[in-house]
Amino acid sequence: MLGLAPIVQPSTAGWSKPAFQKYLGLDEASWRRCDATSLIEDGYRFPEFLVDQGTSDGFLKEGLRPWLLEDSCSKAGIPLKLRMQEDYDHSYFFISTFMQDHMTWHAERLSRG
Image (cartoon, rainbow, N blue to C red; front, side):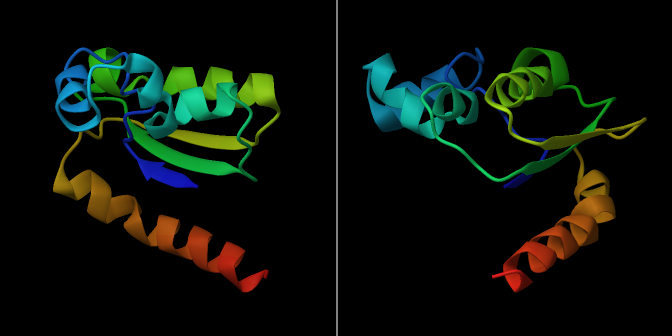
């Protein structure tokens, strides 16, 4: 699994909760199936993660919070390569800069089997 500036725990991020309520209903327990950290806490396992995140992303502290995924992966023994990209924000430039790395990462894993 990979992510470019993902919302790793949308069930608790203040600005993503309204979307969960609208699309998934008010039962917060049902949101866990759409929340990466909750899935890991609930026993789902993934071979590994690659996440790129800009250090200057305006959404970093209140919404994206990659350290939560880092903690969940650490507790579950899931390898996580979290690359904090200095001075990058949440822009197209950030995505376009690291997209090739992510495509290569996927291609390598798909060719394994």
